[in-house]
Image 1 (cartoon, rainbow, N blue to C red):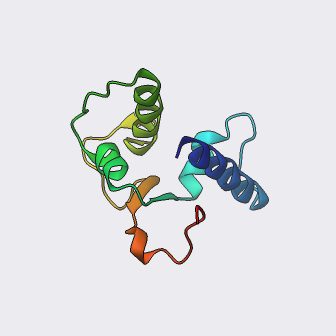
Image 2: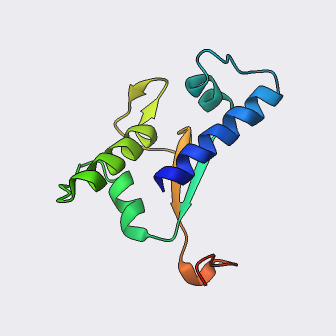
Length: 107
């Protein structure tokens, strides 16, 4: 998920820059303001962890760092942390049941 989110952020910045709306010195926040980034996952526990307002303890330190970075992106709006997630958030995550996916790239 971390790699996909990073790639998606770069793609979003490229699209915003193509519209000539991007400040290249500070590209992350301006690109977020112009386009929502929807993350899709078939891992329901990942979606639940990232959208849960209470931070659960993770025993694997590397995984905890990655999840904390993803949570920070989802729970921020205009550079400040929010208390509740809503449809106006600039980065959102959605769970998709594996049986509903048109293509499973791992098969």
